Length: 240
Image 1 (tube, rainbow, N blue to C red):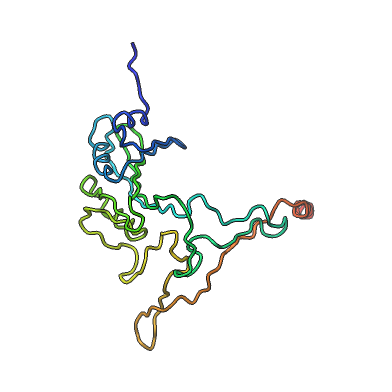
Image 2: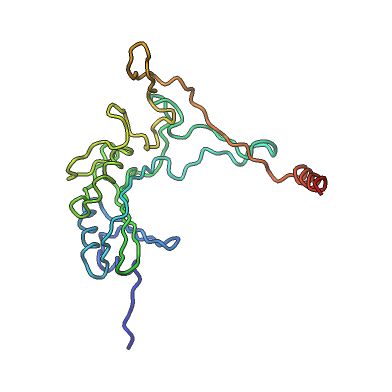
């Protein structure tokens, strides 16, 4: 009798049971969602147990799901000429910090995502956990399981403000020392909070309020039009 084989998703469901909050197979990739409290233990099991052996951590990144599923583009009330789409400009991050639109999105806003690779079994896995608190997003650090997570978690902290509990040295890694806020959060102003320039009189770098007006850049896209087709055909005939 042939031995029964299981897919990776089936093996994950059997092994982790209720800890597997969600299992998604899409585009040839598997995503496992687990509670933040079990995040470190699940990842350690995925590294150590023989049926998984995900010996490599490729990346740890942060995700902000604010305004997830919402769109500020207007595709139904625009004209058939000129711009292909209109935009309301009301998305999170469009305006200054005080008057910024907050957006909606799901109740769970911040997530940490680990991308694992098993060389032995030639397979990849994405493991995600959501921070329980949107105001102070905290998830366990993976540094003790994968030391390479050190800089990845510092990057996610710097850009998204996600705190990794147990990290040995959680400091900013990309932004300046006096940077305010976390620039990859959806409600962070696209124009920033301050601008920096070198003052020749003071002979030092100075920080000033942003002088750029908030704006929405809309690309001009040419639609399919017989005029352009005719012009192209005439131009081809002339060249011949």
